[in-house]
Amino acid sequence: MNSVHLYLTKSLKSMGTSERKAKEREEIKSLILNAAKKLFVKKGIDQVTIRKIAEDIEYSVGTVYVYFKDKNDILHELHTQGFGQLGGAMRILNSVSDPMERLKALGRVYLEFAMDNPDMYDLMFNMRAPMEFLDSMHKEEWNEGKATFDVLLNNVQQCMERGHFDGHQLEPLSFVIWSTVHGMCSLHISQRVKGVNLDNPETMMEKAYEEFVALIDKK
Amino acid sequence: MNSVHLYLTKSLKSMGTSERKAKEREEIKSLILNAAKKLFVKKGIDQVTIRKIAEDIEYSVGTVYVYFKDKNDILHELHTQGFGQLGGAMRILNSVSDPMERLKALGRVYLEFAMDNPDMYDLMFNMRAPMEFLDSMHKEEWNEGKATFDVLLNNVQQCMERGHFDGHQLEPLSFVIWSTVHGMCSLHISQRVKGVNLDNPETMMEKAYEEFVALIDKK
DNA sequence: AATATAAATGAACACTGTTCATTATTCCAA
DNA sequence: TTGGAATAATGAACAGTGTTCATTTATATT
Image 1 (cartoon, chains in turn orange, purple, blue, green):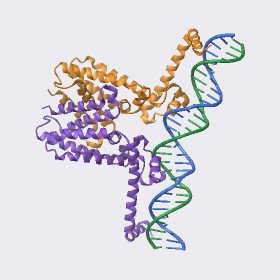
Image 2 (cartoon, rainbow over the protein chains, first blue to last red; image 1 turned 30 degrees about the vertical axis):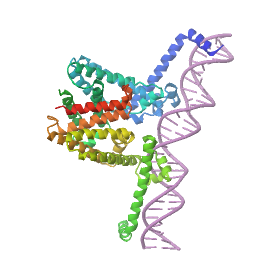
Image 3 (cartoon, rainbow over the protein chains, first blue to last red; image 1 turned 180 degrees about the horizontal axis):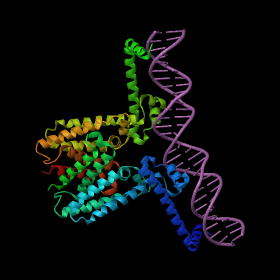
Image 4 (spheres, chains in turn red, cyan, brown, yellow; image 1 turned 30 degrees about the horizontal axis):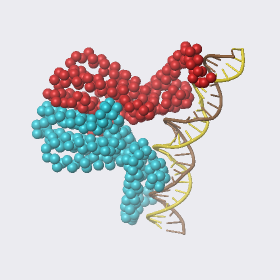
């Protein structure tokens, strides 16, 4: 009687039970992730420690490691949730028919997301943790980033189809556009704007975005 | 006999000694910083620990804290050294007379610096440590960043004086230009480019910079 | 030589992520 | 109902981190 036989017998005879178990597993995973996110938004990323998560959900530290491989795993999950949020905000702009207008609005939504959720943005686009998790899983692809970049890519393509960005190359141009807005967000979040400018940083961000719009609007 | 009197007497009678002491202090500070930088470039930023620095220079951990307030202090010093290096590379471009050509070359130098010294770039423009040190010293100004941004600012101004960037505002435009190149560097260093693109990331960076140049070249 | 000043030390503290043998609980078949 | 197997939860222990500070050692001045 080998283990495979045992497993098969069991899976046949107790399907209902194992399904419930799987649900319970997901519930505890959510419990952990919600606690992590709570600490995350309230106290900042470096206050997210395994011990504090465990304390919050009233489980032991060891339990967290039953449900997640390591801390990078947790941070990667949070990063994925962040992309869900950003993706949702971006999807609303599908109603904007003019691709150029949609592109500009897309940038604003992106910027707003970054400024409203600085720690989440940092996790999604700057921190090593989520990428290290992918590496450890031997996953080559960064699906979340890819999907988001594709939205931009399609948008820029539609702009080009309507005669904008003549002489430009789709992919590198899209990457430059992403870089510009990401750079603004990144510098703002890492406190580099206030250090350089005497104005209030938010004002600078607003003015700068207008300059960006003026740049991409040129024929 | 109060302490002020004691200090004055001493400083008069042993100027040579205290000067030597001050030099010795600077030497040990350099010793610490060089060890820190060695670990930094060889093993990456998170391998720079006080214990490893102390071990490397064959002093105790406590000694490091005699010469530096905390770890942020050390990282801030390294960050300043990085700006010295970047500033030196940028200064070479003073020989380029055409401001528009100089601006494009400036961007390339900046990009090259970031790709050749990713950890240093991260420290200078992304990490919290150097800014936290400034905060703890109650310093409002980020001199290194300001000086570097000023180089860009002057350059853009000269471009505008020669008729480029018509209708744009100097400061916000300069900030957008900085953001674009910084964004490219940042995404590259945080491994977000390879995740999104199938091309080799370096090729993407090169193509993207050409798109950037094309954008700012428009009349 | 005695004393005042400065420098160097390293144990100790409070944290961190992670592991894993041990304990507790749940489940199913006989 | 009960014995045993599978699963889940535990928390002490480990190796690391930055930081502090009473104590020791060395240097300089009187």
